[in-house]
Amino acid sequence: MAGAATGALASGPMSKHPTTRRFHVKIPVRFRDLDPMGHVNNSVYFTYLEVARTAYWQELHHDYSYDVLDFVVARAECDYVSAAMLREVVRVEVWLSKIGTTSFVLDYEMFDEQSDRLIGRGKTVQVMIDPKTGRPRPIAPELRERLKSFAEHWGGPVPE
Image (cartoon, rainbow, N blue to C red; front, side, top):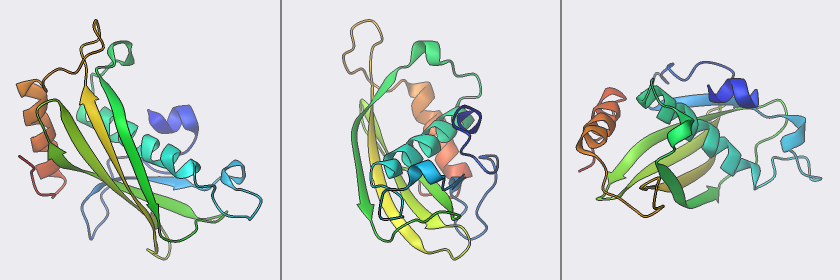
């Protein structure tokens, strides 16, 4: 589990935010996350997205093995809205926003858990690859359906 490896998850990924019903993780801000100005360093937000993405993927694939990693993150972006600070817990919500031929897009919003203040928004593009060649490959029909079903379960629109 992502939280076990990073020590970042405050609660299990299966909990649902009562208003959004989006899949989410809660990450306590650690002292090591801070920059000299006392707020979370901009690069750390990408780690928060990674923790949420990993938990999402593991919940989607209970039987998943990292021995055969079959996607790469081809693009990652983050828009900063407000600073996260020490002693805050960042709730990272993640949802599927698009499924293409060889890729799928996850969108993220990060909130202070206590105040519900928006901290930032993110997006990652995952490209399926052939593990032997490293080249893009089509998303398997079974995975496409699993992604859609998971998105529907979490109350989001089901992308085509």
